[in-house]
Image (cartoon, rainbow, N blue to C red; front, side, top):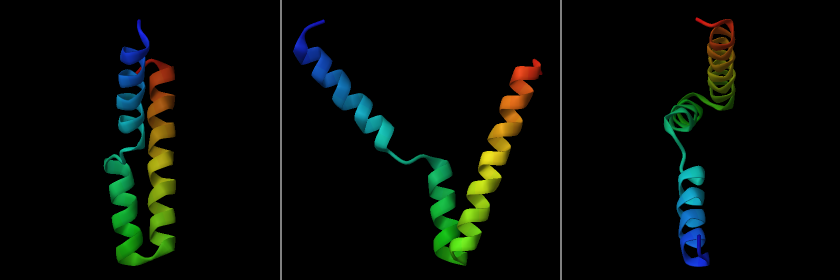
Amino acid sequence: MDWNSLAQFSAATLLILITPGPIMAIIACNTLRHGAMAGFSTAIGVEFGEVCLLGAMFAGL
């Protein structure tokens, strides 16, 4: 792989990584509409859901 391809790949990867996804959008929406505690509660709920999904995955479900 030459340096030009590596630079293009790195730039594309960085762009994808810094783009906010749908989870960030719902947290921002709830924060702006209902305040900081609602945004914090949404973030905690999202993380709890991800932990539950990871637990189900590790359990083989």
